[in-house]
Length: 364
Image (tube, rainbow, N blue to C red):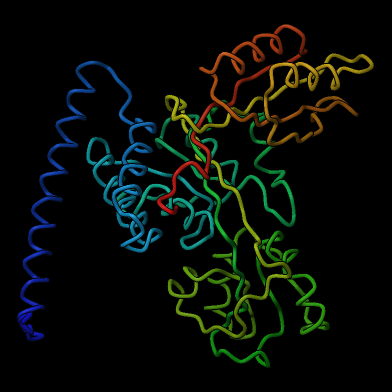
């Protein structure tokens, strides 16, 4: 007959398991520091994305869906990033103030152990990375509803940085203020993109209330915390940071609203096996120039994930093109295609090869 355990006995066993896990985590941290020293001696890059993907894949197989896969990923992501940052703690610039979606994306990517520095503009994030005052920067680049973040794309035309990674963050907008009452709101403030993503809801429920675009959702939340007449459209992190009340939750016009963020640095990571390569090109002024580019990529069997044009600032009706290709610059097809583009384009710049946002998952 199976022995029946008391609550006290089971709790004691949980305490024993927690203590064992803590000792193992401390041992793992020391192992990571040793690897960091060995890499420094051999001048190898501190970050090895392929190794991290192998760890996640092994954990996924061994788990066999017993532990909730998303929770398991979250736990080990924090462990892995904390151990990696022990080799050299990351300083990350992001579009501030504290509690923006960009801040949240940075925490999702680097974990809680990094040092985060809020910037007042996207351009400042680029500047801090280019001048090597920080190791990394986080910037929004496109939204699934509103499209490209043009400030970010235009900054690539000015600053010399590399793309090191990407994050996709589901966006849920909340209408918040100090009281929690919609009647107190005389102005709705938020980032222009957030206002646009809630346009239909605002038109239906607050048709006579003016909107005020500001440079970030967190800035709007801060204004709402200081002025009871202002309602802000902001995320969950801003609500707790600025001690606001939720008036209406989830006011975005389209479910599945997702923003893609890029991680900026001075050097792209090594091949992970599930990568993107981004380039910036300018075309020679002749008929069919863009079609020629697309034909080259098609002939190399390269999957083009994004093609975006932006006007140059110095010449009227001249455009630069951003291309995202599936694969790494070390892949023969991508390498060969980029060499051809260098030769036939008026301008060519490799912006980086980096792990895809959907590369890391513990779900089956």
